[in-house]
Every structure is written in C-alpha cells, then in structure tokens.
Amino acid sequence: MTNGIQNPAYNLLCVILFFYAILESMKKRSELLFSAVRVPSDFLMLVAAAITAFFIRDIPQIIALQQKLYTFPFDQYLRVILIVIPFFLLLYAIEGLYDIRATKKPLSEIYHVFRATSIGLVIIIVAIFLKREWFSSRFIILAAWVFGVAYVAFARSILAQVQKWMLVKRGIGVHRVVLVGENSRMEQVRKTMKRKKNLGYKVVEHIPTASIKMIKELQEKKGVDEVFVCDPSLSDEEMEKLNDYCQIHNIAYRLMPTSLQTTQFSIALFGGEPVLEFHNTPLDGWGKIIKRTTDMIASTILIILVSPIMAIVALAIWIEDRKGPIVYKNERIGSNGQKFLVYKFRYMLWKHSIHKDNPHLEEAIALEKKLIRERNVRKGALYKIKDDPRKSRIGRVIERYSIDELPQLFNVWKGQMSLVGPRPHQEREVQKYREYHRRLLTIKPGITGMAQVAGRSDLDFEDEYKLDVYYIENWSLLLDIRILFRTILVLFRRRKNN
Image (cartoon, rainbow, N blue to C red; front, side, top):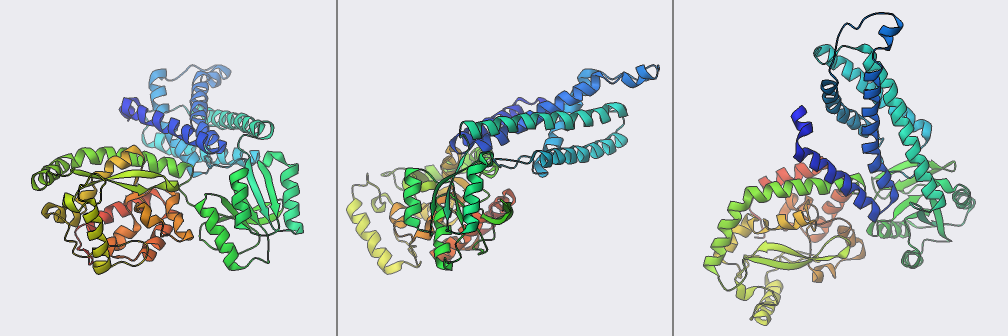
C-alpha cells in the first residue's frame, strides 16, 4: 500500500484533479474553489495532528515516572499515517463536508468533523486490534483524534472567515437573484437578503410576475444565478416554462410554495420560510470534476486498447475508397451551443458524403434529401434513412457495430465530449428543436447514452429526449458505468432501422 502512496503517477493524478477543481471554480463560483481547498487543508491538518500526537507520546510515561515500553520509528509511523488519512478524507466526503455551499453553520460543521473523525477512530482501533504490528500506543491514537478534530475545525473556521470576507467586502461568490412575486413573504425574503449580506445574495430585480422576457433581459445585462418564485397566481404552464428556462440557462430555481416539476429538489428554510430548490443536474461542481477525470482516464486507456482495431479499419477504408478522408469530421453542436468537429470513420462512399471538400457535393445533398423523403423512419427533429444505399461495404460493417464512432474517443480526451451523454446533433437538427429540447445542450454530448442502450437509433426523438433528460437529472458515476456495460451488449443487437 505504501508503494501506491509513493507512486509518481498516483501523485500526478491527485495534483491534476486538485488543479482542475481550482480552474473549474474560477470559471464559475468561489464555492467550488473553497470546497476544493478544504481537501488539501484537511489533509495537512490531519498530518499535523498525527505528528503532534507522535511527539508528545512520552507525556504519560513522564508524568507517571515510567520508562517507555516500546520504540516506533517516525518514518514508519509517517508511512502508516499517509495510508490512513485518505480514508478519513473519504469519510469527510461521505459526511457532506465537501458539499458546495456558500455558507455553512460553524457548529454544524464542527459536529460533522467530530462525527466523521470519531467513526474513523473506531475503525482504526478495530484495524489495530486485528493488525497489532502497526503500533500499540493508545495515547497516540486518542491524542491524534483530539488534535485532528481541533486542527481541522480551526482550519475550516479560518477558510470560512476568508470566504465570508471575500463575500461581504469584495462581492466574490455573491449569487445574483431575481425575486418573482409581490407579497409579504417575498418582501421578507428581499429584506433578509439585503440585511444579511453574509448569506451571499444580491437582489438584481424584484418583478411582479414570471416574465421570461424580463428575466432574459436581466440575465443579459446584469447576470442571474438564481430565481426565487412566490406567486400563487402563476399557472402550472407558466411555472413549467420558467423552470425549463432556468434549466436550460443553468439558473437555480427556488419555489415557494409547492409545485414539483422534477424529482431533483431539496427542502430548506430561508428566513423562516420553507423553500424548494430544484437541481438542474448532479453534473455541477464535484460531479463535473469526477466525470471529466473519469473521461480522461477511461478515454486514454480505451484509445490504447482499440488502436489496433482502428488501424485495421483505417486500412480497409483506404483500400475500398481512396478518394476521401479516412476519418470524417462533421460539425456538431455541443454543450452550451458550442460548435465542434466530431470524428467518425467514414462509412459512406466519398461521392455521397456531405462535406465541403466533396467535388460532388450538390449531387450528394440532392440524393440525401431524396432519401430522407422516401426512407426516413424517425419522427421529430432527427432523421434515419433505412437501408442507406450510400454506405460502402466496409462502412456497413463498422456502422452496424458502431465501430465508426471509435475516433470519438479523441473528442472525449480533448474535452469536447463525454463517454456517456446525449448524442451530439447537427446544427440543422438543433434548429428544429423546441425550446424545452435545448436542455440536451446543458451538458457535454456523449459517445453513448440512455437512448442508445434503450433503442439505439430506433427511438423517436421525443422518446430519446425524455431518456436523456432523465440522465441529466439523475446522473451518477454508477449510472455511467451501467450504461457503458449495457452499450457493449447492445452493439450486438440488430437495429430495426438499420
């Protein structure tokens, strides 16, 4: 285990993860920065607590005028500590001590530090009982526990004060809020936000009703991070439109009183009033960092593993049709509406490919329109041509088993795509979206996704959209793993519309 701690690759991964957290936080909000800083801060405080306990280990013997009954080298002790401390950080994470919130109650945070550290202490005591060759000083264990709670709580209080100072004095991390609804409850919320600046809210505007046009203008001119709604006169349709707008533009949506439009919400009190906060996606904050880190590692490994297959496919395409490129670059729309080039092995004959470098482009476009009219088997914004005659012989094989999409691993590695997510669509397809369909553009597109494992290209677009929205609202690393495993099985199932 000690080799794992000293492994340069392991250490480099930790450094990359930490600095990625900082970079992401600088792009968005200061909460993520302070949440990321708490990880190395807790690590250093726990190390300091363990070292302090080690160097005062002789106090009980000195007081009792007894000789030491054992010796324990410091370097061996330090190796054990470096193995144990990441376990405590995991317990802190499970306890919610790295949740991304602008403000935390000090006593509540100290309690959670005490609780997580105590749980870790019990587990360590059990481990030492089973593995006595570590060390057997009960004083060191208890002293490290006391100092650990004290040091971590102290460091976190300092960070909290720095964050609060930046919030109140410099306005760093302040959430810009639009209040919707004119009534006594919303007026109380406005006064609370104005009076208690340490809560981290700034009222951009207080409007009488949920006018999306007005909120859009405020967002463009002043910026909007959250919308508080307390207007019982709003219809379900109006609230649904407002919720969709907030989801698409990554604006936190808080509602008073009750109209649940998504399963992802949390209940809290604000100024003594109950508030429901609708969560856009778990792919914010740490979820985004975990997903990106996983994509980087997995895509690197997969590129290495499938490189022989890609080399064979490239050679087969070149032999059959040498006129066009082996890898076809097609412009797609990614997260936040950003355009990028998606990579695919070309499975069509070059003369039929829709590409600006194709000398027969006009004929290719005309043929595609004709085939869409005659053979399209999908409903909605997307199309799917049944028994497409434009495919080459090798193209039929690689498209049948989705081998043509292997080059998209490089899109994932570059950060343009993810392994799992909604499929990227062409601009002409996105132009056919209804407004609520644009939720698909709030996260990175993926090589595979919920829709692909449910029905690949056999699904209608509206059904595909519902599955992708479910993924956006319910993302987890475990869900990604399940989708990836199911994708392998689905590849060998024939499509109805192929």
